[in-house]
Length: 87
Image (cartoon, rainbow, N blue to C red; front, side):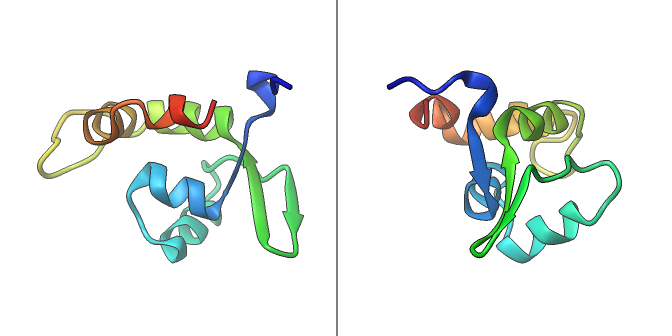
């Protein structure tokens, strides 16, 4: 069974891995107005559409080592095909 790309889900664990931050930081980011809204709040925590997180990442910039790169570019540099692995 192939899940529609628009329905790929991500919990805090997947988001933290994608962003390279702690689980606590994911929830701090989630409290900000510009972060995607979760599609559900389950007993295990919030769940987001992965596409929403990816679009949010594409518009972000990071500082330090990857200066000038978007989060998405830096994540791709660090993790290769991480996003494809979940497909």
